[in-house]
Image 1 (tube, helix red, strand yellow):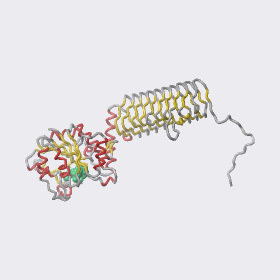
Image 2 (cartoon, protein in one colour):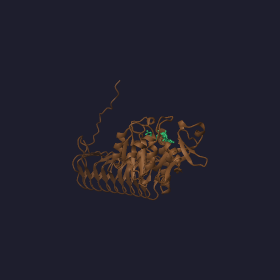
Image 3 (tube, rainbow, N blue to C red):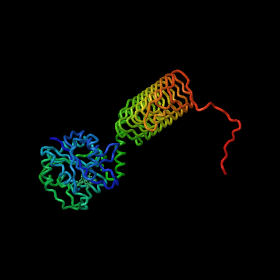
Image 4 (cartoon, rainbow, N blue to C red):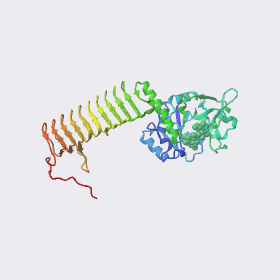
Length: 457
Ligand code: UD1
Ligand code: CA
């Protein structure tokens, strides 16, 4: 049977108090809806349907931008209940399919659980249930004298005895499309909320003598829904802790798994060490023996073996070779490319520049739109003046050049191999190879009768 996933995402998410539709709020850098779609894809769903409502346009835009053009969307104009929501998608589902209903705001559902429920629903109906110490707010699972599931009663419709039941409906439910269509056509909304409850199909299935199976989630995290910012933060932390645990099993050393955030994917060699408070985004690759000091931020970064990044460095869309030393307080901006054994020290900013192996910029420098040769030494306070107010220009520095402290290189400009630029020079014309070039406003003088200025009274 082909699996069709129907993901409910029409709710407003009022309690988020946000302009962003709830299912687009990210968990570990990915919208919640994306996490659910990733799980249904991994569970080999043939077609994914998303039922949209509030913020439908923005959710559609995101689906498009994220490459989910194959997702079938339908808009539920009025949110008349979960049963009504599923009905909106059913015309697009062939009778021979198996339908799995999921929520767009329950982001940590696992592919394995989806597979299990799909398997269990083949000749009947299956749902994921859990026992909670505090079942308040959830639909309760009703079982008959022999322990068979015979229905679900919602919190608001439940009697005090039923409210004492601690087995709850998580919302994940699956059934063959043909049966589901029939049951849903009989739904009524004569209940406490005046809604068409999807959960009423369970009682109908029981009356039809259909086998109803329940599946338990691997952990409570999997069924946790997000209605407000506190729940979102909670789900984020659960995800991060589980991810950190997996990374440590795979061999990474984390100083504190509770103070590590990965919002993307991380590939790493042996003996990589990450100190507290680091945030890694996008695709990050760390070679063998790489270490990250405390509070570093890396987005789409690749670092070669043995490279050390010291505290409080920010690296964005940058790459470094082996045995580099970066930071503390370094900033690599997009298209910074460092060779091997490059040293980038504190308050040095590198943008769209290549630095050859062994090059050093140890303190307070800006290098932008530059090609820097091997073993070049860039002194403290050196600035590439790459922007004339309208256009960007390139600076080229040959191998083994030495750029004295507090020099400005006014681009476009070429500094020859082995050139030596005297400290405090403003270099606006090319400087030849292997020679000292100096350009200061004036030779140093001392004025013997000079008086120190005084404050005005
Ligand atoms: C639902 C279940 C309940 C279960 C609980 C688990 C029903 C009737 N009840 O209750 O048994 O314990 O989830 O969290 O199914 N939605 C739509 N369109 C609608 C209504 C809802 O898309 O017309 C979406 C919501 O955005 C949300 C999900 O469906 O993602 C669940 O809806 P919600 O109103 O939160 O259901 P609950 O009352 O929590
Ligand atoms: Ca809910």
